[in-house]
Length: 113
Image (tube, rainbow, N blue to C red):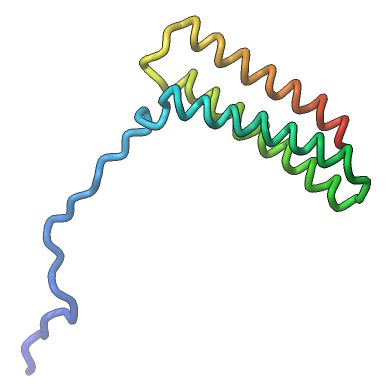
């Protein structure tokens, strides 16, 4: 009988994985950037819609409004729910901002639609 052969790959040693800290992503700067980009994308969609009457461009403008509103409001909600550094008033402001962003985007969706 043959002796069992060793596996074709070397044995794995201990591996080090960087710890992922999602709270580190909830910095005030990142929330401002995400919301600023969302507002800029919504305004670009409104300007695209006013300058062009093509149906494909209108569909792209609708996509831009919806995706920007979702990114901005989800980042605000994540900042309000996930950050331990914010006060209660800041959390309330982020919740209100997320709601207002969704309401404004639905109104703008009527403009670009």
